[in-house]
Image (tube, rainbow, N blue to C red; front, side):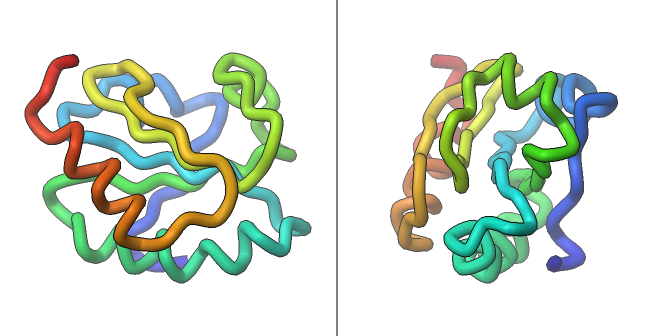
Length: 112
């Protein structure tokens, strides 16, 4: 995992994600998930690209059932962009880096 990606869990999700002043991309994943592992280098690259302007977090679905249930994550990988404490966009499955970047960019400075 990249030095720019942070782990998030049931205990610190509200503070790390919902209270963030920057957009946050959360990667819902599991160790056993092949598509999650193939998406990991893309998530790492995005974390480095957006360092300082957006936050990138990973949440292991096996270890954090409360957040998974709260957001109704039923398939992985799932990427959710949060802004101002609210879910703004969700992508399920493996997406291209450009598509994910567009999702992050769409929520800079917008309180929609």
